[in-house]
Length: 195
Image 1 (cartoon, rainbow, N blue to C red):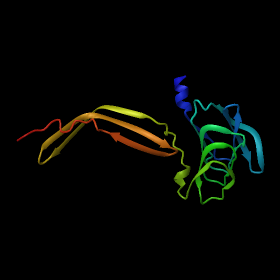
Image 2 (tube, rainbow, N blue to C red):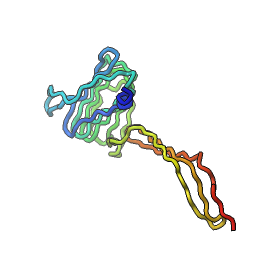
Image 3 (cartoon, one colour):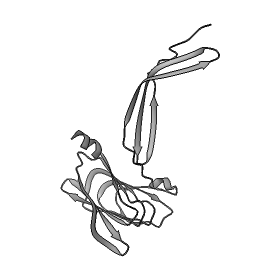
Image 4 (cartoon, helix red, strand yellow):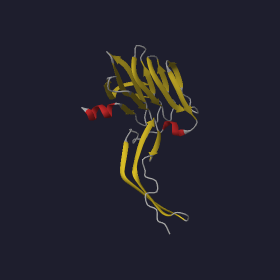
């Protein structure tokens, strides 16, 4: 159950390079997300994805439309603490966000996208195509490495060395990955040779 909670904290819902209809509705205290295949001239009933999200476990849902003319709809009765990130992708997407849920829309501002409703929406539009990128390695992980040995040489002091550890933590907000190196606990100049 611990592994499930770890994977369910931030969930990526992936569309395809065709047209999809992403529908978010309320089901008790939970959120229901359904993704349907969509034809050019109307919706179809082919269900591609369906999942119920518990706000006690899931903190963020990321819906990736990828290519195609996608429709993203949040019903007006939706109330949740789960944050929703909508990444449109190339194509003319339609956003119909009516519910009371914190949401972010990422897409190109150079496309002909339509916004029908935008309740509690924050826009992250850009002319840079990187705004639509999907990074399959965007889970938050902390990596520890010990021992971390550093050796060096300098003309005034001669050979130098240090021992410590490295903690690398990846933090991702959508596709932004920030790596930090924490070496405050490294030992300074542990080895010094004198002439």
